[in-house]
Amino acid sequence: MKRKLAGLLVTALLLIGGCTEKELSTPFQLTVIPQELKGFSISGQEIHYLVTVSEEAKTDPVTMSATSEDAEIKVVQQNIVEGKVAEVIAVPKPASVGKSVKVKIEGKRGSIANSQTMTFDVIEGEDDRKDRAKELLDPFITYLAETHPEYKITKDTLWTGTMVSPQWLVVAHYLFFSDEWEIHLEWHIMIPPSDWARIDLRHRADQTKPSAAYEISSVSQNAAPAPMEVPTEIWR
Image 1 (cartoon, rainbow, N blue to C red):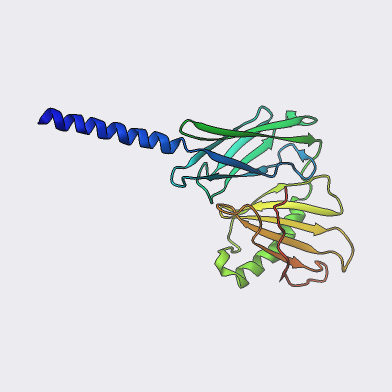
Image 2: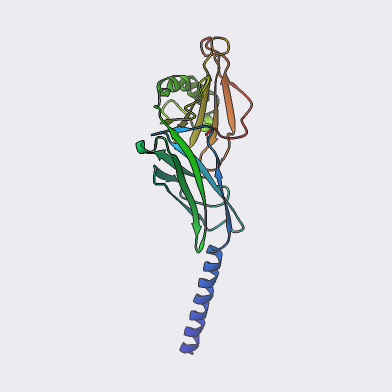
C-alpha cells in the first residue's frame, strides 16, 4: 500500500512539473517602443525604451534583460505580464560619440526567449536645457497638484530629467521621470504670444502612450495651464 501511494505521489509530481514547464514555455510576443529615436542622442542621455509582452498565458511573467557594449543599461520593472510595461534605460558612454550604439533587449520565460536589437546614433553635445526645463515644469506641477489630486503629483514629488532630441532647436524637448510618472515637456522658442509650453503624462507601470496633456499658451504672458489634445505616442 505504501509503495502504491509513493508511486502515485511521484506520478503526480511529474505531471505537475510537466505542466509547469509547459506553462513557462508558452510563446509570447515582444514589443519595443520606439523602434527609432526622433533624431540623435548625446553621451549621458537616458534613452527609455518601453517593452511589453503579448501572450496566451498571463500568469507567468517574462523576465527582461538588455546588453550593450557602448551604453550603460538599467531595467525598470524587470518581470512583466501582458498589460504591464518594462523600461530598458540605455545611457550612451562618453566613448560612444560618433558611433551607432546597439542595445539588445531580451525577454525570457522558461525555455522561450525573444529579443530585439535597437540602434541609435550618438553625436557630440551636452545637456544645456536642464535649468530652463525645470523652470517651465514648475507651473505645471502646481496646476496638477491643485486640479488633479488623483495623479498624486505634488511639489514634493521627486523628478529626474534627461535631454531628448538634442538637435531640435525651434521646439525643445525634455523628459522627466518620477517613480510613477513620465512627463514629456516641450516648449516653443519664439516671441510672445507664440512662446507656448506643453506637457504630456504617461503612467510608467502600465501605459505605452500618454494619457493626459496640458498647455500654457504663452509662458511670458503667464497664461494658466489648460487641458489639450493628448498625443498618440511617446516622444523619444
